[in-house]
Length: 165
Ligand SMILES: *[C@@H]1O[C@H](CO)[C@@H](O)[C@H](O)[C@H]1NC(C)=O
Image 1 (cartoon, rainbow, N blue to C red):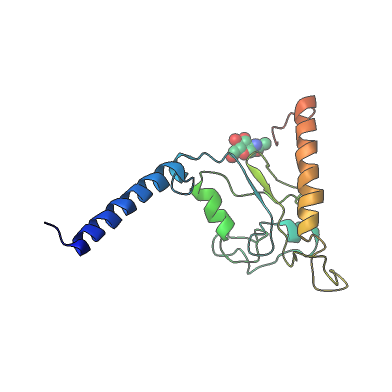
Image 2 (spheres, protein in one colour; image 1 turned 180 degrees about the vertical axis):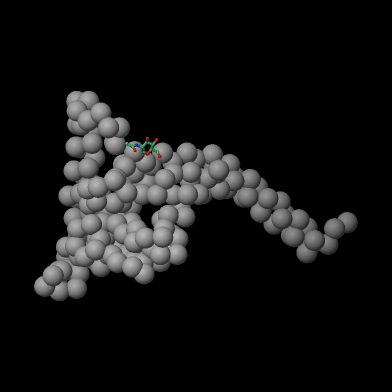
Protein backbone atom coordinates (compact mmCIF):
# COMPACT_ATOMS: atom_id res chain seq x y z
CA UNK A 1 0.00 0.00 0.00
CA UNK A 2 1.24 3.47 -0.89
CA UNK A 3 2.17 5.80 1.91
CA UNK A 4 0.04 8.93 2.20
CA UNK A 5 2.99 11.11 1.16
CA UNK A 6 3.54 9.19 -2.09
CA UNK A 7 -0.21 9.18 -2.75
CA UNK A 8 -0.33 12.93 -2.19
CA UNK A 9 2.64 13.37 -4.52
CA UNK A 10 1.00 11.18 -7.21
CA UNK A 11 -2.25 13.14 -6.94
CA UNK A 12 -0.49 16.49 -7.21
CA UNK A 13 1.64 15.23 -10.09
CA UNK A 14 -1.39 14.07 -12.07
CA UNK A 15 -3.18 17.34 -11.23
CA UNK A 16 -0.13 19.22 -12.48
CA UNK A 17 -0.09 17.18 -15.71
CA UNK A 18 -3.80 17.86 -16.25
CA UNK A 19 -3.20 21.57 -15.63
CA UNK A 20 -0.36 21.54 -18.13
CA UNK A 21 -2.55 19.76 -20.67
CA UNK A 22 -5.36 22.29 -20.26
CA UNK A 23 -2.90 25.15 -20.31
CA UNK A 24 -1.21 23.97 -23.47
CA UNK A 25 -4.44 23.30 -25.35
CA UNK A 26 -6.64 26.14 -24.14
CA UNK A 27 -4.30 28.96 -23.16
CA UNK A 28 -3.32 31.14 -26.12
CA UNK A 29 0.08 31.87 -24.54
CA UNK A 30 1.07 28.22 -24.92
CA UNK A 31 -0.39 27.96 -28.41
CA UNK A 32 1.63 30.78 -30.04
CA UNK A 33 3.09 28.45 -32.63
CA UNK A 34 -0.30 28.28 -34.34
CA UNK A 35 -0.87 32.03 -34.30
CA UNK A 36 -0.44 33.91 -37.50
CA UNK A 37 0.09 37.63 -36.96
CA UNK A 38 -0.39 39.46 -40.26
CA UNK A 39 0.66 42.86 -38.90
CA UNK A 40 2.11 44.74 -35.91
CA UNK A 41 0.86 48.10 -34.69
CA UNK A 42 3.27 49.47 -32.12
CA UNK A 43 3.06 52.37 -29.67
CA UNK A 44 5.92 53.59 -27.52
CA UNK A 45 9.09 55.63 -27.19
CA UNK A 46 12.75 55.27 -28.21
CA UNK A 47 12.73 51.63 -27.10
CA UNK A 48 10.75 50.83 -30.23
CA UNK A 49 10.94 53.91 -32.47
CA UNK A 50 11.91 52.80 -35.99
CA UNK A 51 12.06 56.30 -37.46
CA UNK A 52 9.14 58.48 -36.36
CA UNK A 53 11.15 60.91 -34.25
CA UNK A 54 13.92 61.13 -36.82
CA UNK A 55 11.48 61.85 -39.65
CA UNK A 56 9.40 64.41 -37.80
CA UNK A 57 11.53 66.14 -35.15
CA UNK A 58 15.30 65.63 -34.93
CA UNK A 59 17.12 63.57 -37.54
CA UNK A 60 19.11 60.66 -36.19
CA UNK A 61 22.75 60.95 -37.27
CA UNK A 62 25.79 58.62 -37.28
CA UNK A 63 27.13 56.70 -35.43
CA UNK A 64 23.56 55.43 -34.93
CA UNK A 65 22.90 52.60 -37.36
CA UNK A 66 26.50 52.18 -38.52
CA UNK A 67 27.07 48.62 -37.31
CA UNK A 68 23.93 46.87 -38.50
CA UNK A 69 22.21 49.05 -41.11
CA UNK A 70 25.48 50.75 -42.23
CA UNK A 71 23.68 54.12 -42.11
CA UNK A 72 21.33 55.90 -39.71
CA UNK A 73 18.09 53.94 -39.71
CA UNK A 74 15.83 56.18 -37.65
CA UNK A 75 16.56 54.20 -34.50
CA UNK A 76 18.20 55.67 -31.38
CA UNK A 77 20.46 52.65 -31.48
CA UNK A 78 23.42 51.40 -33.41
CA UNK A 79 21.75 48.05 -33.98
CA UNK A 80 18.26 46.73 -34.12
CA UNK A 81 15.60 47.18 -31.44
CA UNK A 82 13.43 44.58 -29.68
CA UNK A 83 10.57 45.44 -32.04
CA UNK A 84 12.80 44.56 -35.01
CA UNK A 85 13.55 41.13 -33.53
CA UNK A 86 9.85 40.59 -32.77
CA UNK A 87 8.87 41.44 -36.35
CA UNK A 88 11.59 39.16 -37.68
CA UNK A 89 10.56 36.26 -35.45
CA UNK A 90 6.98 36.58 -36.74
CA UNK A 91 8.23 36.54 -40.32
CA UNK A 92 7.28 40.19 -40.89
CA UNK A 93 9.36 43.04 -42.34
CA UNK A 94 10.72 45.77 -40.05
CA UNK A 95 8.00 48.25 -39.15
CA UNK A 96 7.72 51.53 -41.01
CA UNK A 97 7.20 54.60 -38.88
CA UNK A 98 3.77 56.19 -39.31
CA UNK A 99 5.37 59.66 -39.36
CA UNK A 100 7.89 58.77 -42.06
CA UNK A 101 6.65 59.94 -45.44
CA UNK A 102 9.43 58.40 -47.53
CA UNK A 103 10.08 54.77 -48.36
CA UNK A 104 7.41 53.45 -46.04
CA UNK A 105 5.43 50.28 -46.42
CA UNK A 106 2.46 49.67 -44.13
CA UNK A 107 1.39 46.34 -45.57
CA UNK A 108 2.39 44.55 -42.33
CA UNK A 109 1.64 47.21 -39.76
CA UNK A 110 2.79 50.61 -38.64
CA UNK A 111 4.88 52.04 -35.85
CA UNK A 112 3.52 54.98 -33.87
CA UNK A 113 6.36 55.10 -31.33
CA UNK A 114 8.51 58.22 -31.15
CA UNK A 115 11.58 58.86 -29.04
CA UNK A 116 10.95 60.90 -25.87
CA UNK A 117 7.24 60.05 -25.86
CA UNK A 118 5.38 60.05 -22.59
CA UNK A 119 2.24 58.22 -21.58
CA UNK A 120 0.51 61.31 -20.18
CA UNK A 121 0.36 64.82 -21.65
CA UNK A 122 3.97 66.11 -21.58
CA UNK A 123 4.77 69.30 -19.68
CA UNK A 124 7.16 70.65 -22.32
CA UNK A 125 7.70 69.56 -25.88
CA UNK A 126 10.50 69.74 -28.44
CA UNK A 127 11.86 72.28 -29.45
CA UNK A 128 10.86 74.21 -26.32
CA UNK A 129 11.44 71.23 -24.04
CA UNK A 130 12.57 67.64 -23.94
CA UNK A 131 9.50 65.58 -24.83
CA UNK A 132 7.89 64.37 -28.03
CA UNK A 133 4.47 65.89 -28.74
CA UNK A 134 3.31 62.42 -29.80
CA UNK A 135 2.42 61.05 -26.39
CA UNK A 136 0.45 57.84 -26.07
CA UNK A 137 -3.01 59.36 -26.46
CA UNK A 138 -1.96 61.08 -29.70
CA UNK A 139 -0.32 57.89 -30.96
CA UNK A 140 -3.48 55.91 -30.36
CA UNK A 141 -6.50 58.22 -30.49
CA UNK A 142 -5.31 60.44 -33.31
CA UNK A 143 -2.72 58.60 -35.36
CA UNK A 144 -3.79 54.97 -35.12
CA UNK A 145 -7.51 55.69 -35.31
CA UNK A 146 -6.94 57.93 -38.33
CA UNK A 147 -4.58 55.41 -39.92
CA UNK A 148 -7.22 52.72 -39.53
CA UNK A 149 -10.12 54.65 -41.03
CA UNK A 150 -8.12 56.31 -43.81
CA UNK A 151 -6.35 53.14 -44.90
CA UNK A 152 -9.69 51.33 -45.11
CA UNK A 153 -11.18 54.20 -47.11
CA UNK A 154 -8.21 54.32 -49.48
CA UNK A 155 -8.35 50.57 -49.99
CA UNK A 156 -12.12 50.68 -50.61
CA UNK A 157 -11.80 53.45 -53.17
CA UNK A 158 -8.84 51.74 -54.84
CA UNK A 159 -7.25 55.17 -55.02
CA UNK A 160 -3.62 54.21 -54.64
CA UNK A 161 -2.18 51.58 -56.89
CA UNK A 162 1.26 51.43 -55.28
CA UNK A 163 0.18 48.62 -52.94
CA UNK A 164 1.51 50.49 -49.90
CA UNK A 165 -1.44 49.66 -47.65
C1 LIG B 1 5.58 46.12 -49.04
O1 LIG B 1 6.10 45.04 -48.32
C2 LIG B 1 5.56 43.79 -48.70
C3 LIG B 1 6.11 42.75 -47.72
O2 LIG B 1 7.47 42.84 -47.56
C4 LIG B 1 5.89 43.50 -50.16
O3 LIG B 1 5.31 42.29 -50.54
C5 LIG B 1 5.35 44.63 -51.03
O4 LIG B 1 5.76 44.44 -52.35
C6 LIG B 1 5.87 45.98 -50.53
N1 LIG B 1 5.23 47.05 -51.27
C7 LIG B 1 5.93 48.05 -51.82
C8 LIG B 1 5.14 49.08 -52.56
O5 LIG B 1 7.13 48.14 -51.72
